[in-house]
Length: 405
Image 1 (cartoon, helix red, strand yellow):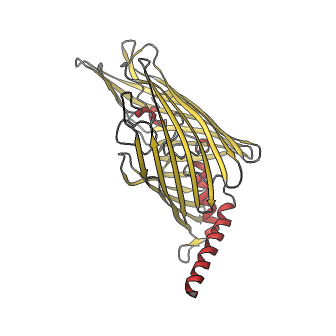
Image 2: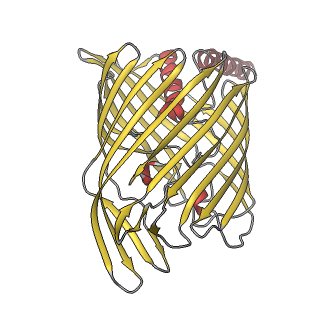
Image 3: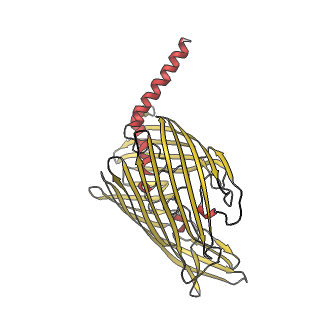
């Protein structure tokens, strides 16, 4: 009995000690991705101070267990049902969907080693959100970074803005925000106080294909994507201007068998930021667009079509605006909207091809203890076709997260 009491007291003390460490420098305790989530890990690494043997390498192993209960008004097309994908909104009648899953659960490794050339950081992030709709391990990040100047591995694309990602309970998040994790080689150079220039060679992947009664259109990239960004950070928040260059081959096959193929240049621009409002709130925004950049959006659409007798990449534009409000130390709300458009004026596209996606979400998050977070969220999405037809869906999600560090 005494031993059990001592064990309970030790666990309570450990939880309290972790709570003090977690509360310190924890700007967004509900974040699971982006810059806020990375800052949480670095803060916990500093608090834990675990080292490998007699070396100077500090490390952290931990993550969280998360259970999501989802109730959707309509079942989405395809296998993926555990997150909102607006492009999979059914236009035909569909039954309601109820889900209970733990695919967002995550495990992390983080290490820091001082060297003569700067601190060497390594990072591994794994969750259970595979692309096939099943629960199986997926490596989201795997990289090494030397100081602030050089990074090699799989992480967030240079074209996106980690600071502009809103904290949604929905795993996928807003349709019109840029969000890609891929293999890259990135260099960074400080150019003034609070200003930095990044440039990278990044993994090249094919955009999604589209098919319909008139035929099908596909595309593939031929060289590494080139991305660069100019970034400013300060106590007020951050702003970022990003640019992207791609080389894409577009092919189209008509229903009668005729085919066309053309090599085109893809390019994109993005302006985004996170602006502090008052003492604890923040406003997140992004406006991004370009040709051949569909796969960089959170809910990618194929954006190739026949225009003026030839194949063209169509312009896509995404806009996102979210507000993060802190009610108290334990309560916060994140709400906003996002949209993604294809400008297909003058282009020949199937009538059932998608032209616009809209996404809205609002949540309420409660930190019941330093290691336990509860939240509820409502999400609404609408998809519009070239024909003018629209389809909508709504979803409620309730989540509980237990942090393990």
